[in-house]
Amino acid sequence: TITPFGCIRHSVIKLRSPMKKNNAAKRLNKKCPVLLDHNTLGTKGLGIEVDVEDSLDLDSSVSVFRVDGLWRFSRNLRHRLDLGWFDISRDSTTTLLGNIQIGDTLFPLGTEVTTSFDLQVFKGAYSYSFFQDDRIDLGASFGLFVMPIDFKIDAYGAFEGHESESITAPLPVLGLRADFAITPKLFLKYNVDFFYLEMGQFEGAITDSNLVLEYNAFKYLGFGIGLERFNIYIKAEDEDYPNIDFNGSFEFNYSGLMVYCKVYF
Figure 1 (tube, rainbow, N blue to C red):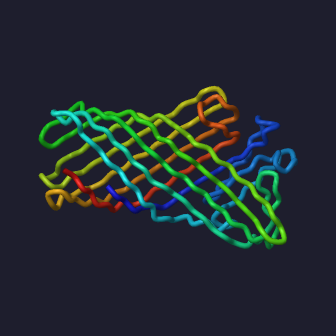
Figure 2 (cartoon, rainbow, N blue to C red):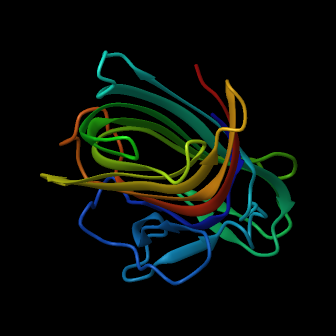
Figure 3 (cartoon, rainbow, N blue to C red):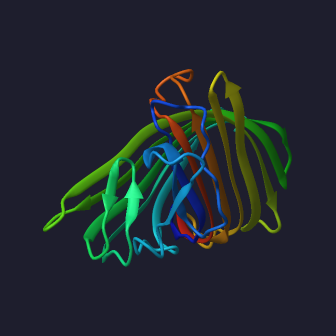
């Protein structure tokens, strides 16, 4: 399946000072902010928030190219492998309308900055259909989401400054799916993957769900339309979780319309 879609509802990055990990940033209700711990300013009790849409001119609505594939590999069609990938990347160049403190760098008023906020998601899962008949297919799955996350801001010219944060988050997921045949060619499909874990100073949660109406118009070609919702939250204050070398937290939420074509055989 190839799917363009997307509307970002909310995304947050919190970066904590490596010297004092127990001080929390204050979270305000903004559209898509980057939150920085007050220790980056050296001011006790002060939380700094940067709204990346308003201050850094990043888009809140994007179109995303997505590829998914599945393979049923048993005679009874109960065993299935799913693979998927999509990339939600945003870049901007803008002139700051005020001073912005990010990490250890104060970007002053009038500075031209280039910002990138990138999230890729690689998905793999195995599922087993525990109930099948001529119209209904119900299954359970387990798999892995691997998500490289990058935030970077650069300034060149009279003032030069650079700040960035990158993590790769591998998170296991459990899932449920349901396919209903309305007619021999028209299907209603629902899928949800979810995960929550606390391990020492690490906390992670993810949900990915979609509901689609799919029509197999031709022998090898079908079309679909539906809704997708994706939420991820990662908080790490130490290296308690494998491959998470990050001191802070990341939160990202989106929902969007899916319109796709499907090749099957």
